[in-house]
Structures are given as C-alpha cells and as structure tokens.
Image (cartoon, rainbow, N blue to C red):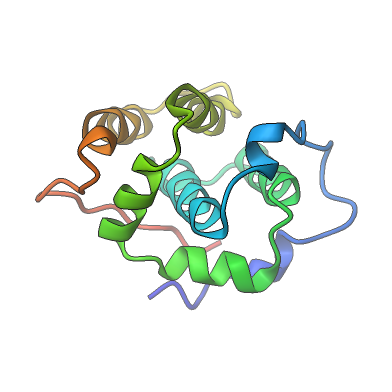
Length: 141
C-alpha cells in the first residue's frame, strides 16, 4: 500500500527544530500515536504536494511521539476505519484538531483539500467511524 515511502528520512537526530514535546504527545497510547501519524500524513498529502515545511513538521512530530521506523510503517498501514475509531479515543479533541491545523498551515497555505480533510475529521471522529465516501491517499515522498 504505502511501501514506496522511505520512512528512514524522517527518523533523524538532527531533524529541524524540535516540536514542543508536549504532555499530550507523551501520554498517547501506541495505537493513538499510529492514528495521529496517519491523520497527519493524510493532511500533508491532501493537496497533492508535500512541502519542505510539511516534511520538517512531520519529522518533528515523529520525534515528539518518540516514533521509530516500525511505528511509522504500522501507522501508514493502519486501516482507515481503525484510524477513525482510535482518534475518537483521543479525548483531547482540541489538541487533535490543533495538531492537524498546524500540519496544514505549516507551509502558510491552507489548501481546500486539507481544509476538507480536517472538516471530515471534526464531523466523523465523534461517531468513531469513517465516512462511506472517505478516500484519501498518502503521497510517496
């Protein structure tokens, strides 16, 4: 499915400036981390372009989550239905939406596709299920 992504590019010691390693990130379960990683991958892929700023943000997020290559691969392979269910369990919804908005705006450009994805998350997370017409892809980078 997402086998072409070179995940090793994101796990580095000298990643861009460190994302604030917040308590929220550290307190997440492994499944919640996977779901958040996949949701952020969807956001930064939504407009069909992954910018340098988005790559840096993603690398910082992974560092904040203490994610390794294995966790990243498992996150990319997580079923969409499972992602929605798990994101529902992230009780800090404002934290989640804030994080997705940061990912979308890190390049100072909120694309319509990114906005639509975040709106879908807002609408369907409380239900813990994915929409029937949900189809997003993760770009190869």
